[in-house]
Image 1 (cartoon, rainbow, N blue to C red):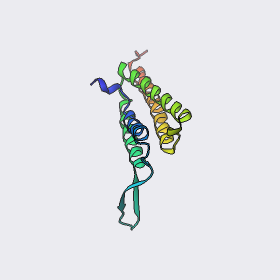
Image 2: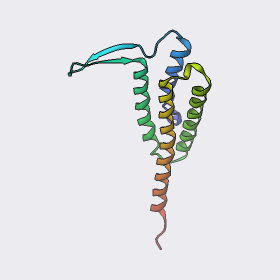
Image 3: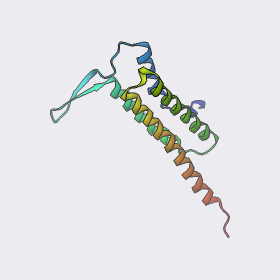
Image 4: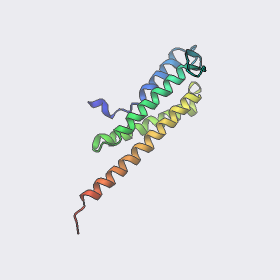
Length: 135
Protein backbone atom coordinates (compact mmCIF):
# COMPACT_ATOMS: atom_id res chain seq x y z
CA UNK A 1 0.00 0.00 0.00
CA UNK A 2 2.93 2.38 -0.53
CA UNK A 3 1.04 4.00 -3.42
CA UNK A 4 -1.49 5.45 -0.99
CA UNK A 5 0.70 8.55 -0.54
CA UNK A 6 0.89 9.35 -4.25
CA UNK A 7 -1.62 11.99 -5.36
CA UNK A 8 -4.23 10.34 -7.58
CA UNK A 9 -4.56 13.50 -9.66
CA UNK A 10 -1.30 12.54 -11.29
CA UNK A 11 -3.24 9.96 -13.37
CA UNK A 12 -5.26 12.38 -15.57
CA UNK A 13 -2.29 14.77 -15.68
CA UNK A 14 0.00 11.97 -16.89
CA UNK A 15 -2.54 10.96 -19.57
CA UNK A 16 -2.73 14.60 -20.68
CA UNK A 17 1.07 14.77 -20.86
CA UNK A 18 1.22 11.60 -22.95
CA UNK A 19 -1.45 12.84 -25.36
CA UNK A 20 0.00 16.33 -25.77
CA UNK A 21 3.70 15.48 -25.90
CA UNK A 22 3.67 12.15 -27.72
CA UNK A 23 0.73 12.72 -30.08
CA UNK A 24 1.06 16.36 -31.12
CA UNK A 25 -1.60 16.07 -33.82
CA UNK A 26 -4.38 14.83 -31.50
CA UNK A 27 -7.18 17.31 -30.79
CA UNK A 28 -8.35 17.12 -27.19
CA UNK A 29 -11.50 19.12 -27.99
CA UNK A 30 -12.69 17.04 -30.95
CA UNK A 31 -15.86 15.05 -30.29
CA UNK A 32 -15.06 11.34 -29.98
CA UNK A 33 -18.56 10.14 -29.08
CA UNK A 34 -22.08 11.49 -29.15
CA UNK A 35 -24.82 10.39 -26.78
CA UNK A 36 -28.42 11.09 -27.66
CA UNK A 37 -30.28 12.19 -24.56
CA UNK A 38 -33.93 11.44 -23.76
CA UNK A 39 -34.71 15.13 -24.28
CA UNK A 40 -33.48 14.87 -27.86
CA UNK A 41 -30.29 16.82 -27.23
CA UNK A 42 -27.00 15.34 -28.36
CA UNK A 43 -24.12 15.36 -25.89
CA UNK A 44 -20.76 15.44 -27.61
CA UNK A 45 -17.95 14.01 -25.47
CA UNK A 46 -14.32 14.96 -26.11
CA UNK A 47 -11.05 13.60 -24.74
CA UNK A 48 -10.78 16.77 -22.67
CA UNK A 49 -14.20 16.12 -21.09
CA UNK A 50 -13.20 12.57 -20.18
CA UNK A 51 -9.94 13.73 -18.60
CA UNK A 52 -11.75 16.37 -16.53
CA UNK A 53 -14.29 13.77 -15.34
CA UNK A 54 -11.43 11.44 -14.41
CA UNK A 55 -9.74 14.27 -12.50
CA UNK A 56 -12.96 14.97 -10.56
CA UNK A 57 -13.27 11.29 -9.59
CA UNK A 58 -9.63 11.37 -8.45
CA UNK A 59 -10.38 14.54 -6.46
CA UNK A 60 -13.16 12.70 -4.62
CA UNK A 61 -10.73 9.97 -3.55
CA UNK A 62 -8.08 12.56 -2.63
CA UNK A 63 -10.55 14.32 -0.32
CA UNK A 64 -11.47 10.94 1.16
CA UNK A 65 -7.77 10.20 1.73
CA UNK A 66 -7.41 13.55 3.51
CA UNK A 67 -9.61 12.28 6.35
CA UNK A 68 -6.89 9.86 7.46
CA UNK A 69 -4.57 10.80 10.25
CA UNK A 70 -0.92 9.89 10.60
CA UNK A 71 2.44 10.42 8.96
CA UNK A 72 1.29 9.22 5.54
CA UNK A 73 -1.27 12.01 5.32
CA UNK A 74 1.48 14.60 5.81
CA UNK A 75 3.50 13.08 2.97
CA UNK A 76 0.35 12.91 0.84
CA UNK A 77 -0.32 16.63 1.42
CA UNK A 78 3.27 17.54 0.60
CA UNK A 79 3.17 15.55 -2.64
CA UNK A 80 -0.16 17.17 -3.57
CA UNK A 81 1.47 20.57 -3.04
CA UNK A 82 4.42 19.57 -5.23
CA UNK A 83 1.98 18.42 -7.93
CA UNK A 84 0.12 21.74 -7.73
CA UNK A 85 3.33 23.77 -8.05
CA UNK A 86 4.42 21.61 -11.01
CA UNK A 87 1.07 22.09 -12.73
CA UNK A 88 1.23 25.84 -12.10
CA UNK A 89 4.73 26.13 -13.57
CA UNK A 90 3.81 24.08 -16.63
CA UNK A 91 0.63 26.09 -17.15
CA UNK A 92 2.48 29.41 -16.98
CA UNK A 93 5.74 28.51 -18.74
CA UNK A 94 5.03 25.76 -21.31
CA UNK A 95 2.89 26.47 -24.39
CA UNK A 96 1.26 23.00 -24.81
CA UNK A 97 -0.14 23.25 -21.28
CA UNK A 98 -1.70 26.70 -21.58
CA UNK A 99 -5.19 25.34 -22.24
CA UNK A 100 -8.54 25.46 -20.47
CA UNK A 101 -8.34 21.75 -19.69
CA UNK A 102 -5.01 22.23 -17.95
CA UNK A 103 -6.36 25.28 -16.10
CA UNK A 104 -9.18 23.10 -14.79
CA UNK A 105 -6.60 20.49 -13.70
CA UNK A 106 -4.77 23.31 -11.92
CA UNK A 107 -7.92 24.39 -10.07
CA UNK A 108 -8.80 20.79 -9.14
CA UNK A 109 -5.27 20.40 -7.76
CA UNK A 110 -5.67 23.63 -5.77
CA UNK A 111 -8.94 22.33 -4.28
CA UNK A 112 -7.10 19.11 -3.39
CA UNK A 113 -4.31 20.98 -1.61
CA UNK A 114 -6.52 23.45 0.26
CA UNK A 115 -9.18 20.85 1.03
CA UNK A 116 -6.61 18.33 2.24
CA UNK A 117 -4.94 20.75 4.62
CA UNK A 118 -8.30 22.09 5.85
CA UNK A 119 -9.72 18.63 6.53
CA UNK A 120 -6.51 17.52 8.26
CA UNK A 121 -6.40 20.59 10.49
CA UNK A 122 -10.10 20.23 11.33
CA UNK A 123 -9.67 16.52 12.13
CA UNK A 124 -6.58 17.18 14.25
CA UNK A 125 -8.38 19.92 16.18
CA UNK A 126 -11.30 17.58 16.89
CA UNK A 127 -8.93 14.80 18.03
CA UNK A 128 -7.07 17.26 20.24
CA UNK A 129 -10.32 18.44 21.82
CA UNK A 130 -11.38 14.87 22.57
CA UNK A 131 -8.08 13.97 24.22
CA UNK A 132 -7.79 16.90 26.64
CA UNK A 133 -8.00 15.96 30.31
CA UNK A 134 -11.06 17.19 32.15
CA UNK A 135 -10.55 19.97 34.69
